[in-house]
Length: 400
Image (tube, rainbow, N blue to C red):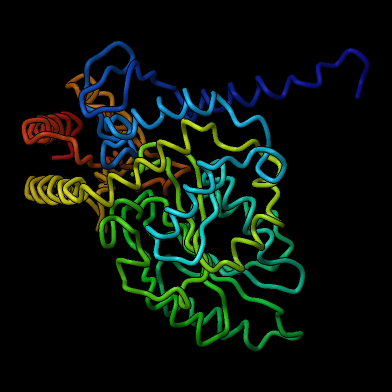
């Protein structure tokens, strides 16, 4: 490098290139809580793109639990979990979470991303194979990049192609030590659901472990929102690791994994994102505990979420909108070209609805969409307002 040359010049150059291609994120600011009617960039709008599925981030029991823990336990834990950062609230949260998930044990991480990036590289290594759905979340992809295992990809949600990959793996020489199959439970861009019974069955036939990222299934699928393993009535011997997050339907923040006690003991002894990160502040752990309480005692939140989802999807399809293969509250409104999706999002914002466009390279060039996420706290009137806004915006951009 030449003396006097700016070693960080590439940063600005790359940002300017993103701006020129209209691929940079332009952040909008939420003032106040994440509620169906909220203030974004100073404008009162309907929130239709939050992961706060059940509205629990503002549930009185969740808020009050956080405040009480702040007063009783302080603002922070002061350490990482294995040293001095494991409080009674963390232990109780993991006990209650395991009971909720009907697993032997659970372990709480700082985030869902930390769970995947910290645990996946420990489950497989040299001499192993990991088999991943082609549309798995970026946190899974990054976690697998850290692993020293060989990687194979199967076509999205295609059990027949997974069978092909596992069959080839059986014939590999030398034989793999371990095989791990990894899939999202609910895919965040399209709202479709992984064929988990078929995946688990094929894995069992080939002696492979199954790891499912259920970040968008918790609080949505299964008995009382227990997630995709519950949704498909699968035993714990069929899905060895069920990963999830408190950052979506639970309304708080944090990641976690549930499974056998051996899995949890292994994870907290080997997973460096858990070992080397400060533990959750007491208020966060207490709020997560309260969110579990709410899910167990107030089933109406999950019921309302599905009522809102069924109405929105039914009326939108009747109007002529293409919602793809969604089977969950994640409802993509397919537009096609990226520019049209951005114009539609801007028009929706003018009409009082906040719903962001998902464009290339996050999705294929001709599959840009407005990704909406339904919320249990939306009123019937608010849902009607949102559908009317989509009708107007769709006509304005030539979609209808």
